[in-house]
Length: 161
Image 1 (cartoon, one colour):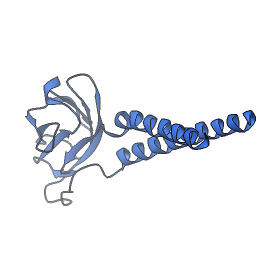
Image 2: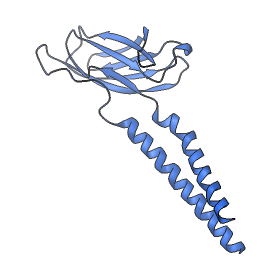
Image 3: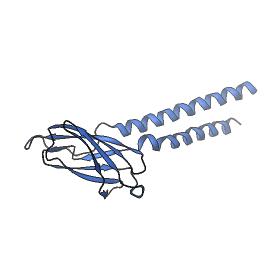
Image 4: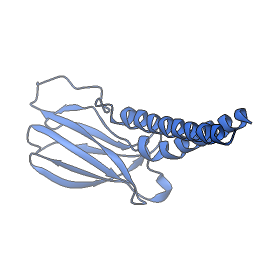
């Protein structure tokens, strides 16, 4: 009887973790390269957007920008992407927030516009680890909930015996 209770509690915790993980950890926007000189090009990619649901919209904000860029291609690794030419951009850091065609948020990322001959271009992507942090937090929460369920069931089983 106790083994069955433990297995049911563990299965409930794992099942809850599986249900919560996709929404929290998968939304991701990538900008590559992460740094470009004025007049350079960056590629904006919303990795979780389904091309079948319509174009992604990338909202770019920064020192002298507040504009939307519509996705133009399907990204090679999945999702939707667009190229952004930085001619006329002021030096500084810009934030890109993506929304999929179905209205779902696809995360955000930043890139930096540097002077020509300035800092070397980065490798792109999100260096802040937000996606990994969200995934870890979700799994930790699911494990804690599973532990609570397990302890409650053990106490109930002890009280009956």
